[in-house]
Length: 123
View (cartoon, rainbow, N blue to C red):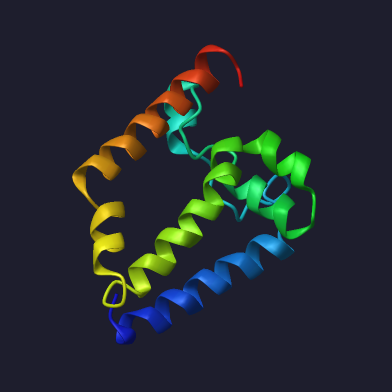
């Protein structure tokens, strides 16, 4: 990510976090609902993410896990991946490893598995 695009992305991300800290997604009409769930009745892999982030920002870790366990489990990896992406010139082999087709396929398989588990077994 170029430095010229990093600043607006960081500002937008911070704004979303502030919004989710201040607004309870379970109570607000300003928070968008999942179109996939509305259209199909099934949970998408991201269903519950807004509620999970809101719960995390308020220190309610068990609630966050209940809303979307994959998001909570993946947060350390996403932070690591962001760090590797920012430092891709410093760690080019690490960046190549974690952005390879194999890594992407593994991520997609985990997301698909999570989607199936939560819809079949109600996890």
